[in-house]
Length: 387
Image (cartoon, rainbow, N blue to C red; front, side, top):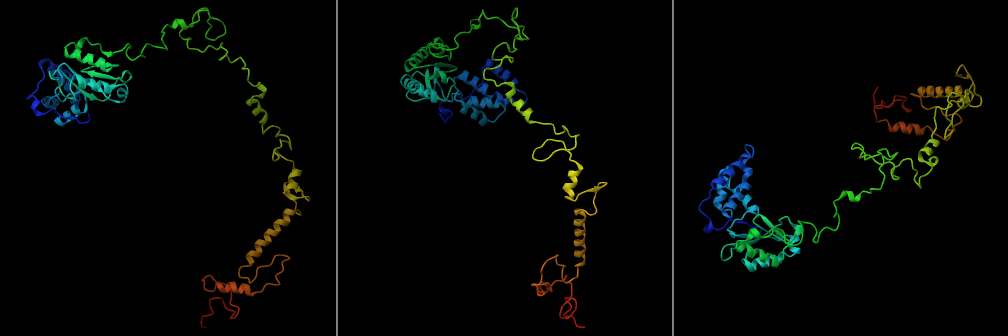
């Protein structure tokens, strides 16, 4: 099945040409395609050549390639790809193509192949003694639901058994193939289940309508006098218990316990009562404005007080500010001094001046060293200089 080659030269005809009728038909087909796309007609032209001679000859491939102005190899690729094209002489009355793909194989395609070997020829692509019949195995032919099946020329024969296929082959061999029933060979309509439909077997819509049920209006408020208008026919019937919004479901929580009610109770307005001193709602911190007394106590301590919005001159903030200013002045004066003023109350009696000298000595090799050498009373870094 995978290897498809042209027939031997001994059976190839010397030439090919469409008949007058087929030549006119081919010109009409080619004109259906836009300019520059005429090569798309290769498949219908090959099929018509096969219908004329019974199979696709090498001369027919060359003829189609020349007519469509395309390389012969391109036409050969198409002819060898599709199994519908017969590359060797086939039976003049019937060429049986047996589907051997999985669905048909599971349903008995091996039995069909055995029938063809018995009634036509032991090998595929070979003619029977009279040259009227031939057979081959092909891939899926698209009637899997009615497997197993065969195709003879353009017609399919489905739901086959070995015995039924043998009857069909004999009918074609006698020249009576046109009278053979096409499609399913069992009591089946097209592809419906064998034995008929078991579900969806009624198509009368009137049987599903309760004639005694009252017809309601589109709004569902009152019964309507007649059928709803086409514009209202698609509206939901809100009178039904499933869709009526006014009917409380048995398990529905009261409105007071709804999620919206709980969210509303937990929320508050931050601006509520902000115009009253000391007002506000308490949470983790105190919200809203506070009084001036509380503010002064928080800023200045117990001895608080203010004059025209300024802190008292003898308050703790004044003392704290003076201490900060003094610390800045002392740091400024320390530049070039030997020792930093000790903090009040600090005991430095156990400290020696050697530590400071040692640290400064470690920096004697740097260019930014300042200060004096204790031994020479010269600026550090000038000890090596000669007067």
